[in-house]
Image 1: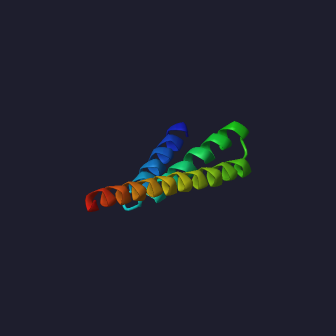
Image 2: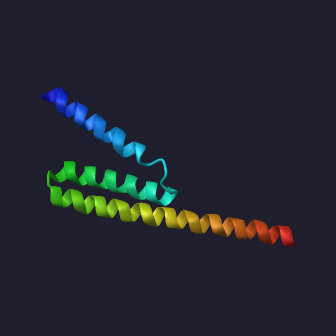
Length: 86
């Protein structure tokens, strides 16, 4: 029974990670944040409800982090372009 659960967990992880190949950076960060947040609160509290809250918070955090990085990349590109013009 224990080896069956382990096999299912490994198979699930492989399927989830293979689905990330076509994702954007923002989608990957949101998925990673959701997985980490859900696992952390789920383990800490032992409740599915809190695991869902952790997943939502993690996904939101991943979204905000990638949005900030995109703003920084845009600002950098604008600065490079302005430097070339002068």
